[in-house]
Image 1 (cartoon, rainbow, N blue to C red):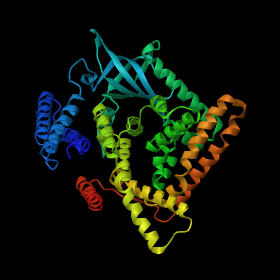
Image 2: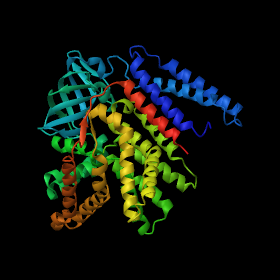
Image 3: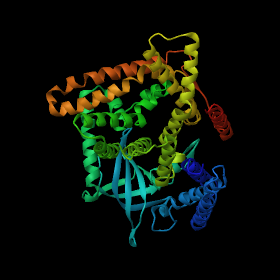
Image 4: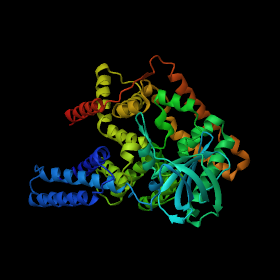
Length: 506
């Protein structure tokens, strides 16, 4: 029992520790040492009682002690993620105008703006220069364009993020490892490109090339969808497009997720096998390919979670050992939260991705079984394969919607009722779209004079995708607007859902 529930217990308790730390802890008082000491104490006690009663599988005391241990570990991890308040960190200079030297780490072009993530190097003052650490977000005009690695001198009023309605901008900044932000400061380039960013510049160069191919060969709407689906770049999606996809329940298809990672892995595996590569060697090549792809799309948590789960599953096959998908899921979540504890509270993609997989594991089989009973009862057995595929998509969509409903309602204040229908008409198309885009990119590189023709299948597919998204909203009551912010309601909702899951568990 102890080993069976090890990863779910520590992942859940660690997450709970992060949440409680965010609510109750005072960051002006540094108490990390005490929380880490309590973590070690209860961890040792847990393994002591496990060894003492290892033949008694019903003994729950070691699991309880393990839960308490990682609860304190969550407190400790959250505390150390906040910087010390001193003049060696940029957060010390909040709410004042400063002259500083920084280097650009990342640039995002969005809504006629440049959002520049920069590493602060020095603060300039009349007394001289002070070396500081920390990162800031600079929001500036679209032009002039800057490049990753540029050294800037910035005169800026630095601010902390604030909480607006249900959105905590400070946590959002911390989720991206950013301490402060500044809007439209004075900027001057003072240095050459830094060799430290050579790999990142090459990756960005490849990404810019791929984006230019899409922009040149596809219509404006189709190119924005291609960049979102294959490169994780949603900056060119218009507000109207995002709104239509949200209301029709198709937003998850235009965001990099486990579906995209599994499809790309499958395509690459089939290519390697067709070239005569053994499955064991393919394991290494697939991991290298996925790490490169994750670097290309800037490591979104949902994709990284899918990569971890896929790699661990492949590793279990490689080692000829049976793995548990539940343990792999919770282990992946734990690793991601260790790396960045703010994902749990400030990253919608991480929340939806994790919950969606839980829904597929625990709710999807029950929905499918229920629908199969109805089919057998009414003897709807014509075209078995088609009916089975329809059941799969319908059950899958309903399962994911049911478990992610509170997060979606809290974030967007609306809920799509037509999602099972729209997904039924579109979900099958995503593998084909990815194939069309990859083939178009490869063949247009080899035969650039035919590039416009090579992307016609992708263009037609995107036209169909947009058509279904728009027409699904013509269905009466296709979506409803809801404004529910009560934590008690969400807790009650998930308690009922978990009760249903365990009540129907075989």
